[in-house]
Length: 70
Image 1 (cartoon, rainbow, N blue to C red):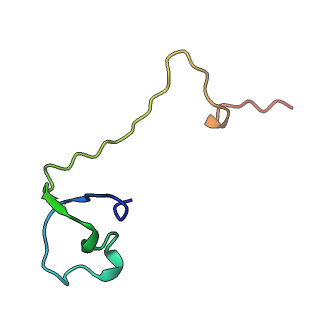
Image 2 (cartoon, rainbow, N blue to C red):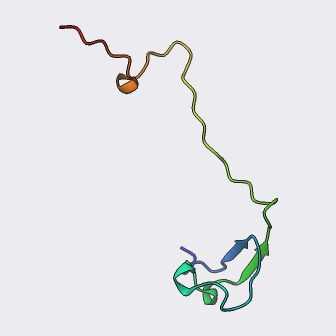
């Protein structure tokens, strides 16, 4: 996606010197990046999805509440 963009912005936690990152860890070569924004650890907000049962909803079939009648 970044290779096809007119302008690619890389959001990084910290800048390192060339050669400090192994080539296999690079997802997008720098030749495709026009801007770099350093956000640091505190600026990175990753959303975490949490779920909870809906009130009044029946338990799912795989919840371990099945009855085994013979």
